[in-house]
Image 1 (cartoon, rainbow, N blue to C red):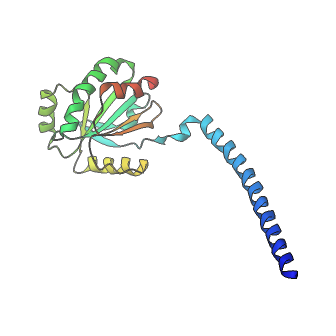
Image 2: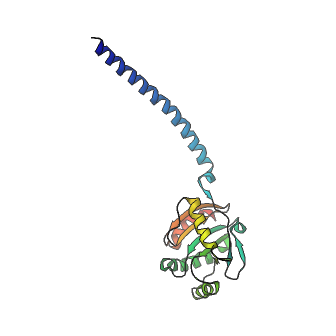
Length: 192
């Protein structure tokens, strides 16, 4: 007859410890909710700081991303040979025409597209009115591409890949594949 009482005691203690566990978890959840609320208050903590880099424009001038602090930057990884990248060019040209005076800048990091003079000829043909960047010496554009993949935790494996960076230098949006002017403007507008 002792056996059933041991089972009852065992069930009783199991339930007691289970309830104790639940109460303890609830206390932790309350602390977690408070932390999440604090994070929400500090909006910038949800975003990744855009890593600085140095590349050359098509005239050989050295360009640092940090020189554009205070501007909203659309950073586009692309190539002259890339069909989807080409589809975005007219929209980027229009975005620059419309918003350049509002502190907006587009940087096109040109990947595997030949020497600057070839990229310049392509740029002239497409009436590109924004800054195109290329290597200074050898493979800097590939290093910048890798760096942006590392900091976002998502390697850049296809182009176009585009980032919107706010005036304080935080990455606010990432897009893989071509997008229209209206899609970009919807996300840029609150930052201008």
